[in-house]
Length: 163
Image (cartoon, rainbow, N blue to C red; front, side, top):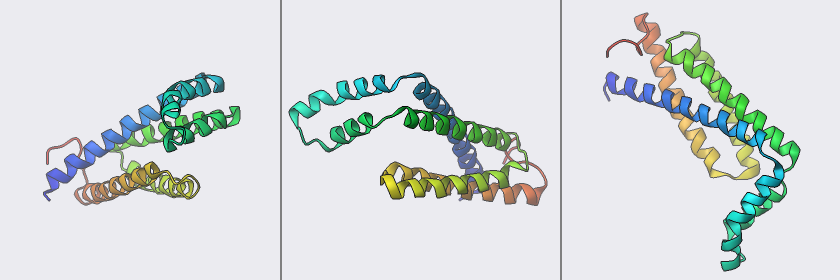
C-alpha cells in the first residue's frame, strides 16, 4: 500500500473518530436530559408489538429488561461516560488534525486504555459492538503509530501537506 493511501486512511479514520465522539457527546446529553420513565415508555412502545407476535423474542426481551433496570444512577453513569469519553476523543482528534506532535503518543495511550475498558465491559455484557469498536481502535492505533513515525522521521506534519 502506498504512503499516500495510508495517509488518506489515517485522516479518514481520525475524522470518523471525531464524528463518533460528537455522537457520544450528543447521546450523553440526550440521556442526561430524558427521564428514566421516558426510556421505559419508549422501549415498551418499541417492543410491544414484537412481544405480542413472539413472546420469546430475544432482542425485545433483553431491551425490555434493560429498560426496566435503567435507574437514575445508570442514567447518570451513561450520560457522564458518553460526554467525557466524547470530549476526550474530540480533544485528541483536534490535536491530530492540527498536527500536534504530543497528540500522537497521547492518543495511543488513551485509545489503549479505552480498549482495555471496552474489553473489560465485554467480559460482563458480551456486547459484540464493544469488540468491533476495539478492533477499529486497534486499526486506528496502528495508523496513528505509523503516521507518528513518518512525522518524526520527516520533521514535518504530513496531514496538512501533500503526499
